Image 1 (cartoon, rainbow, N blue to C red):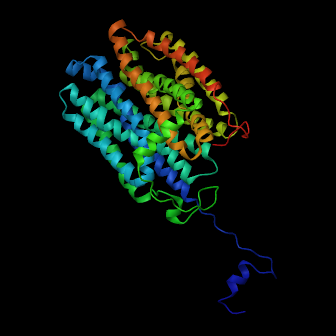
Image 2: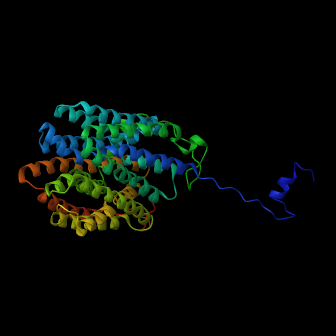
Image 3: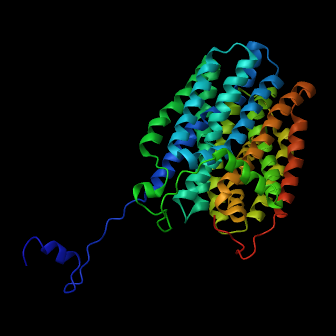
Length: 438
């Protein structure tokens, strides 16, 4: 045997039975998921700001909390309304292009706010530019990546990517709170702009639109050719909405997810810090508590994705909303100047439940609407943000009118009970097992 053929004989020889171990490579889908995770963190940096800046903007410009809350609500509403169109635009122009433009819009809005002097500028910079940019990187972005790159482990990946928003909160909330406390709100806004810009090279160099771009099958699935760019993105998005709106499950999903947004982004993320400050809690301490929510949000969301792969998504949603509502009813009793153990327990409990609702909601969208599920989920997410926008605005108005946030906490608790009932009313698709794999 000559030397050139000897290695081949050693690798797999019927005489020796020897087979060299093959080096397993990480599937490219996990690299794309990692880039998506980092991108969402960078885009989520802005979400750390609104609750921190309500008091500083009120003190510097004498704008009412309702006026500031209106700008935050515009941002949240556009975030939600952009999401379904962003999913269709990704089908038309590709994920990379849409996300790079979105990150640039977030950076432009955050940077321009450095020079604002009037409330209408707050509406344009925070509401319009940042709302459109973050909306294009909303959960429909995660849904599009998950649907294209994964067949197996979809529930788990959905949970991980959803937790990216919490990771951004964990990273940026304490940092921005420290900057606001020591240097004012303007340097914090510049920090958010830089965070968005830093992510752009990672997206452009490492993100790929479809497994077929690199000659691969999706993780856990079979190879499929990359479909042609879908033209008429806006028309398709509206058509999907019209078709979905004719079904009962859509309204139950949208209604319950609107309450989800009202009780998280609209309520806790926007008004927890100023509410705690009303009770003389330092802004850095309140922001640190929100960051702790981010820690347990990551755990809760990933665990929820694991559960969604194994159990009935409707029942998971009902449990999540019921527990959230109960916790909100106790929150007014826990507000004090110092951070006591009961408040820490609330933060941990609420963090585990924060966006645990996303994996089962997305799984139900897939179950009910198939190939259009990413766009349908985008519309469901729009309802989430509309609910958040209403509470971001009305919470500020209630604080101006009543002098406290108590009525807002109690109302949100009652709404969560309604969401639990709505989740149980969603009908199952015939022929599917009780535990639908996301």
